[in-house]
Amino acid sequence: KTFSIDGSKVFIGSLNFDPRSTLLNTEMGFVIESETLATLIHKRFTQSQRDAAWQLRLDRWGRINWIDRQQEEEKVLKKEPATRFWQRVLVRLAAILPVEWLL
Image (cartoon, rainbow, N blue to C red; front, side, top):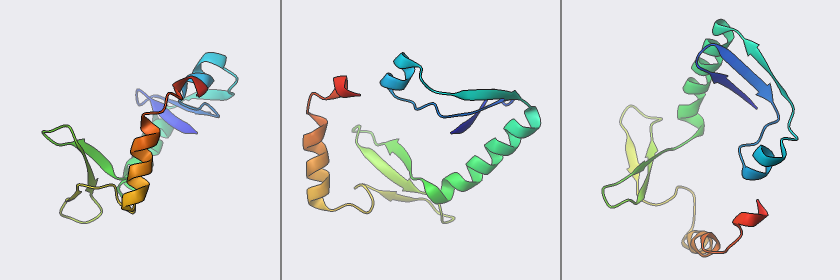
């Protein structure tokens, strides 16, 4: 995993952004202080983000909208893309299970 910090440092390593990894700190990585490299990584990530990810936005009722920015004009989807009705039902049911302690 790679990310830039404050536009001047780059972290490259195996850190996962979850409670277990943060608490146990068993991950490895290193920091490079380079504005040039941090800027390059930021630009590449921003460019590829449009093609690889949906932007999420809450509507005025607090519901998630998926924003497709691949075309010139934004396309707003009210349901999670590429999912079926029963998949969404299962996700909602799984969300109420008390499994946070397992992470």
